[in-house]
Amino acid sequence: MNDHGIHIKEVPQLENPILIAGFEGWGNALNISSGMASYLIRRKKARYFADLDRDTFYRYDEQRPRVSIIGGILESFKPPGGSFYAAETDAGQSDLVILKADEPNLRWFQLADQLFSICLKLGIGTIITIGSMYDNVLHTDRIVSGVASTEDMVSRLINSDVNPIDYQGPSAIHTIIHSPCIPVAGEEETRKMN
Image (cartoon, rainbow, N blue to C red; front, side, top):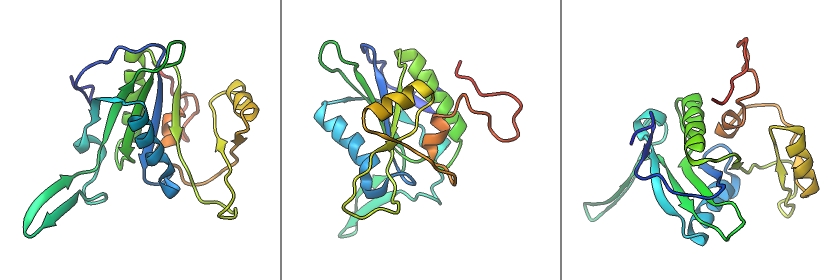
């Protein structure tokens, strides 16, 4: 099944799932974002169930495919892309959908719309993107910070010792995913998740 940019091999049956997304690229200092997604996939024995369409979201002249050629033989070929995994958790906990992907070069809003479509299909009510950045801190400092879509969620972050972010500048795919209720400059109406 192709959902206009996401190829779904099978639809997993999950209980009260949440989506956790980790991306290579802009918001992946020290490989925290992609590393955490990989860790969750391994730790929870998550099962692969869908892929991002590479030709829809990636420019190969921006993110060239990685190859391994040994002794004149092409051993491996890995183009940029991303995959979805599903993991069941203990009773009473939310199951997980994990997206591990290279940050797309193209069609960020289309990707966000397709993520929302998958979320509706799977009954996902919460999206968490994992990111990391270098800042004006010592290399020994570890500061956990976050951004949320509502004041209630910001309060929950603060109560969990997560510092609210203050930032103005270039964005990553994370912001597009979290922005369906924020007006985009030049648009009259707010984007809404359908």
